[in-house]
Length: 268
Image 1 (tube, rainbow, N blue to C red):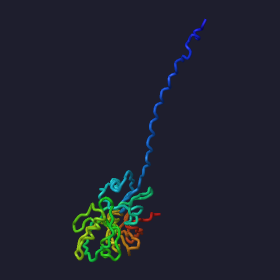
Image 2 (cartoon, helix red, strand yellow):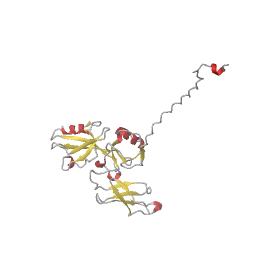
Image 3 (cartoon, rainbow, N blue to C red):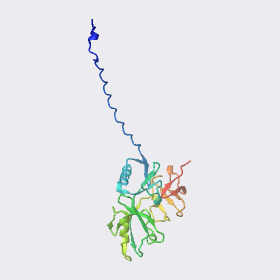
Image 4 (cartoon, rainbow, N blue to C red):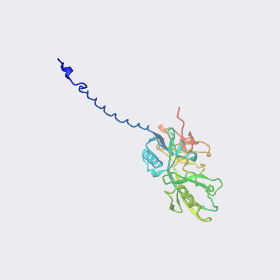
């Protein structure tokens, strides 16, 4: 007698096991976060240190600096790296290193000078800050401009004969100056970078004395800055009674003069 197993048709297969469910798709890898690039900055004439980040061009850089110090971006004439001095060798270029310290030079006093063009060239090298201000980068020794002491490297050229050139590139300003007729006076309106008070007076020289009244010591005292020459450190003399009624006459405190800033050694 044939068994039930024998009667089962040959080649018949049992039910196949179901395929495993597909594994859920792996989530895409999160993009790697860019490192924060934070730069230190100060106003060149003196300020606390600010920190800025998130800029990709000069206009954005100026906007960040202006925001850090509560000023308008249009107040900034140019920036130097690692020096608060008006040093065109330190002028901000296309690259900033992580260790670079940015000093912003802002608008100071406005001045007007009259120039007579007696030669084809005035002796100026002009550049611009990429945000609308052209300024003097170099003055040629013995040139027409070199003989005008009020004109300094770092001065921004705001107008020629009352015609505003704000927004012009440096080559446009240079072309305007080249096309001025010879033997005919013209006027330059210049804006000098704001400086610490030790350099507010005079042009390229610092042979001036300065007297400032102040209430820093006491309401009846005053602060006198003295300098014997441009390479000699400044001295501060307190006149009148000092704190607690002390007599401050002849009390000299030496100040190191460095590029328009005043620095006093810490008291021991």
